[in-house]
Image: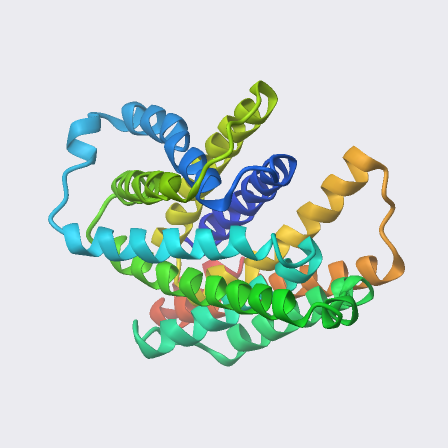
Length: 310
């Protein structure tokens, strides 16, 4: 277990996914299924390069868990489709707020299904992070506006929450697969199956992208591939209950991106909420380091304990 490296991979993956989401917002005329196809297909570019760098590509895609990959890919693709669809019914901030239910669901499922030891400070960090996100989003929540369109708003809320639950379920399956499968193998089959599922939506009607939209979709796919590799790697390095609270760091990347690209200065609520989110992550790191030191102290003989303190 390497929790610090796992947390680092998770945080960088959230940056890649935020940049990917920005690309998808710039191509909002494209249907969700078509977006999912491009995102999954071009995610193969960084994935195949990474797999080639690690060694033989053919050896990397061998698997004895075909059903496990199908289950992970189906739930992940369904989550992606629901999340992309929710953006058609809800403002971005509302959809993001509902999507942050994923960490709480993932920690709960990790305890129930994976039988992971979920300590009190894990739950505390998740809830603190959620409070921070709600502080940041509270001034921008437009449920009052959505009240004027109850049918569309209700559809968006259901899709966003369903996407969050499916994302948590997919994360559980990723954690299971990382025990026997390579990271590249997991991401490869997810990208392949998701691309095929996205392609099947062509019968529902696709939008012919302009040249600009095409390259934006390609970039979204590459960023999504990078994010998926790092996300899967993070689950192989640490328990889910340690990793999932850092999902909230994506809101910090969102604020930073808006400030850099659009010159939008964060309000006091954004600053306050960001501090709360950061504290939840720091709290996890502090507790993990303290627990690790305690374990080493118990295991080491007295003379070695003195050296360790020095």
